[in-house]
Amino acid sequence: MKNDNVVQVKSYSFAIRIVEVYKYLISEKKEFVLSKQLLRSGTSIGANVEEAIGGQSRKDFFAKLTIAYKEARESHYWIRLLKDTNYLTEEQFNSLIIDIEELLKIIASIQKTIRNS
Image (cartoon, rainbow, N blue to C red):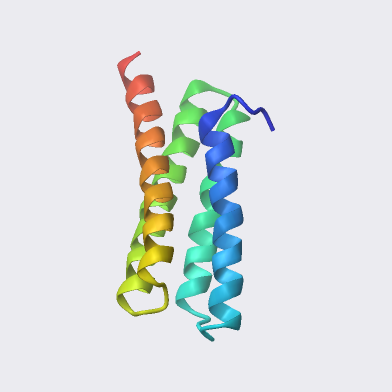
């Protein structure tokens, strides 16, 4: 993985955090449904960023990046829901929400740049 590709590095790091949160939720909180949803959407962001980077065209890159943005929005939802249903502490929530909002801003900025060029 290239270390200078911010969205690639941050989405991969976020996926690792999501896997850890998932393991915590199933083992400590015995929560299996919402956590699986977060696992799917949270790890999908990075997978779609990787696909975008390997895209065959500018249009393909944009399409995959759009999917990554949608998955990030979904992850944002699940994180909020897990906090509001008391599966995540305030501290866990704050840490995750900062990361996902940063990813959303980065991806949206890349999309805007592509649209304007």
